[in-house]
Length: 402
Image (cartoon, rainbow, N blue to C red; front, side):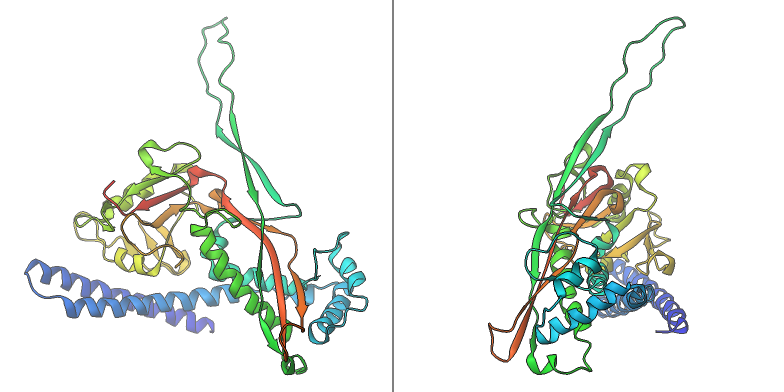
């Protein structure tokens, strides 16, 4: 996709949005007159799909244009390691690979079985994970060499007080801290390759394997970052103790009720989203975004202000192609649940300040040409985890009356 295509895409998105508003306004008028709107609902659905597809095409181009040229960044040792690693992948030859790996990776310890993958393979896996898992891209990402990531978070600061001249007031309240501990867990994926393919030098096998592994990791991790229970996996933003925001306490995630069971409120549904936005403390709002699925956003596009004059969502390419709702960017992550009774299908937060993705250094690869005749299995293993490190920075909408 060229720059002209991006410009054309933005123009098409704006044209589709103008058509959407006209169609939805016509639907509102027909509903007020008691007329059938099934044909308009179908038309709105088609326009929604068109806008979603245009946004994703432009977002994909934006991500691809920032891909690093890993080949030019390799050191001499890493170049030699790459050649040896390629022989291992295609032919199972491991002569000298251990020594080259230690030099190329600047590491004093061997992985637990298998061999550490090439730097560009690791970069490709990380890139695809970030492309598929929106929350993983928005979060704070940390790479560690241990099994745990620990962080102290200040939960309350010191308080000022006034004292009379010549008097002392004693000690002020001391700040309080909470220690956040995030564990990393092993995840694996196993693409299989026909042995004939291994002998085909025209196939960029390392890239193909990295892409297959990356997609599998991305889909699994993306789901965990939203809804994982934290048992042997990352803990998702919706799986903590969620309480009404009016009763929010540290260690829980505050929510705003949508006003209806399994739906947005039937009257002025945007009001509750305004409350959700306002529930986030002001210091977290710069950089905050709405996180939801395409299906939920399709409904939110219909919301107007109290006067019925202005739509609350508007397209804006500068906001990451997801548009803006109430002035904040919208990010699409289809791991967010569909709207249902008691679901948490919409989040608003500064996810870089609220959620941490932790990766243990290095992805390892085990080659198995024994298990299945005529095929070779490649077992990729990574150790990672994730969880909330600042509960104040994320708010949810619960689709319920309270």
